[in-house]
Length: 206
Image 1 (cartoon, rainbow, N blue to C red):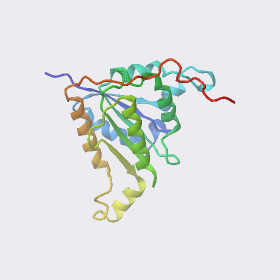
Image 2: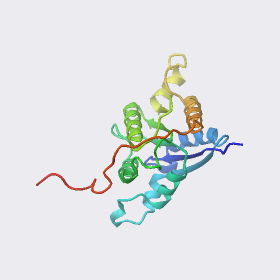
Image 3: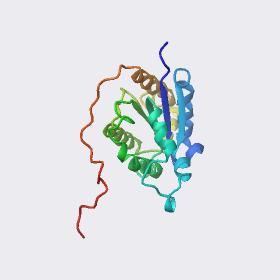
Image 4: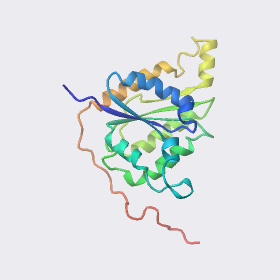
């Protein structure tokens, strides 16, 4: 019997476990646990607990790094803040730089769920998918969506007119495709050369 895939849900929302992104990830988790072992990490909590001067660190907290290494695939969630993802997710991505192109990411499928109040989420989704590909992830088809309060209100008022809007039911497609991608036979992926010695070096003179 094949091993169940191990999936990591990364909650990158500012509101942590109390916000809309957490609700979306909880709905996804209920679908995924039927077919996979699912681990969850809330970045706002993980970084708050990491020992660092001034609350900052140049390295991933060990709990995050270990969870990333264990996972066969990822579902990343974030809210939308001034046309971008959250500051805690940005911090995660910055500290993930040393892991670019390593076995932590290389070839592992990733899906993305973005929440928004009204606008900006699609740009966040597309940009975040681009970052995940550059880290080394693979993107399954139709593995990202934006859940919008504006779309939910429109759907409640006129369901027929809102048929082409993303909705919570589309999480089923995202979860299915993420699971399917973890079962695809591994390929001998290659990574391009990455500067691991002095990528933080200053190169501009004052």
